[in-house]
Length: 66
Image (tube, rainbow, N blue to C red; front, top):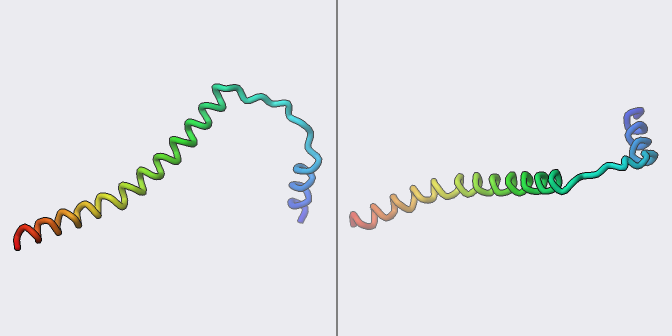
């Protein structure tokens, strides 16, 4: 309960930080987020595509044998 009150007091009674994020840091952050999202999609695609490719190749061999 004390931790909850502490967190709420920090959130509601904090002062301004006067911080500046320059364009280099901002673009680097955006680039790394995009890279992370794209790599997740590539991994998911690879997990789905390669087993599907093997199954399709087996089906082609079966059709050619008949």
